[in-house]
Image (cartoon, rainbow, N blue to C red):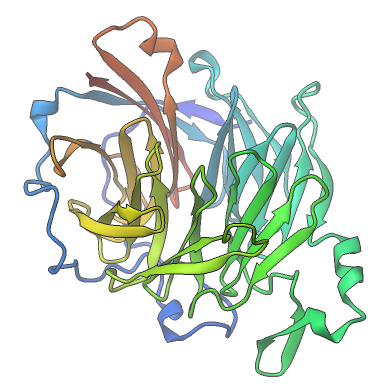
Amino acid sequence: MGIFLPCPLPCHCDKHQDSDQPQTNLHSDSSSNSSLTSQSSLPSVPSLTPHSQALDHASAARYHCLATLKGHSSYVFSLALAGKHLYSGGSNGEIRVWDRNPSSLSQNYIVSEGYSAVKSIVVLGDKLFTAHHDHKIRVWRIANSTPHQKYKLITTLPTVNDRCMRLFSAKNYVQVRRHKKSTWVHHVDTVSCLVLSRDGSLLYSVSWDRTLKVWRTSDFKCVESVQNAHDDAINAVVVSNDGVVYTGSADTTIKIWKKPDGGKKHSLVSTLEKHKSAVNALALSTDGSVLYSGACDRSIIVWEKDDGAAHLAVAGALRGHKKAILCLAVVSDLLCSGSADKTVRIWRKGSGRSYSCLAVFEGHRSPVKCLTAALDNNQSSNNNSGNSYLVYSGSLDFDIKVWQIFVPF
């Protein structure tokens, strides 16, 4: 059982030594650099936040740290919200579930342990999908009736049946490194990110092995694998409501994938190349018209749809973080960003293409590795002058912080 603590004052701690990096020889030299390494910003991209270093006090947003959730004994790598619960994954393989009720935020329990680092979590109905450092995707049955019971492991992807079906035909094998082949359904390096299609029928996974894979959630079968989707480790994937897939990589590019009309396989339709360093995080606006990308160059590039669903143009960059951008999350018309500078920033689009920084959350003692956010239903329904949101941040300081921010209309 974890414990609840009020948030401490901002603290500056010793330099963190990163261990979250590829452990194989699959990648080019660029992937050997830690995702926490901050590189120079992008002078060629205009800033959408001309005064980003200073908080926009004119916004009148009010915010505070609601709680610090203690319980993890390792880095917090992943967070996911589902109904009344918050799920968190640690670098030691531990998965915890927390009660989101403000009066019982500290209530949590371990639903799985003993596996490798949990890099990503998604929830579909009564199933929990987790991506791991040991190259596996695991599927768990959520136990709602007995909350303190460990979750049952349903299967590991690729499944035994999926693997066996591919073993006896040479056409199912692909080259994964110089003297090694594997079946195309296998990830052969850390699975870094998961995302579900809008209808939940498909699960997309990306890996440091440079592949994008598509899984059918009804029977857990791998239905597609895009080999060598990037030239280096893939760190992030998001999917729009109309099925367009975006992948961000340590090769500094973002690629856009789409199934042609009547086609069954995704094809590359565009490559976005403005970043000069590893892309660590992606997020889509609620309506899917804007893509946000965060990288080691400390900037968040804002990409807007131009003359087609697959064509995006650079609107500009959001600046203010002092180190690498590690995670992004969108809720309503807000963008949340977490950084190796130990802070979380909240952004909102203003008139034209300008953005304002509504808040800077300080208090974590190490880089902020993961974020999720939601409307605060306990507050918003009682207030006609604005909306209240809850932002959850997971850090390499082992803590999860819960932030509450009120944003006027």
